[in-house]
Length: 106
Image (cartoon, rainbow, N blue to C red; front, side, top):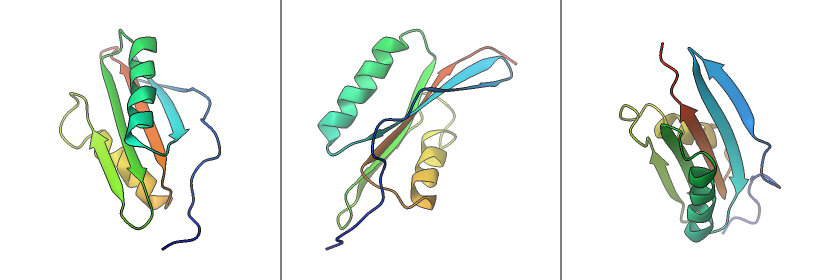
């Protein structure tokens, strides 16, 4: 059993990125259960109800790792999996990362 692991201490501030007239809002949350993950995603879907996509990835645990990546309608493996790749590359767990996209055309 791992005694220590890396995660984030508190939720991130909302981050905005603009590209080709689309707006992307980024969020990161420390989480301890799938129920907590669902609650955060539901809150963001209500807050950004007119957004085109709510893509996310999460990871829980240290020994028995649970994870999920969701593209939410974006092309397959173009959003959720790259987000999860960042979770892996920074070696963090008990974390949810969400990217909310408002489509603005090209």
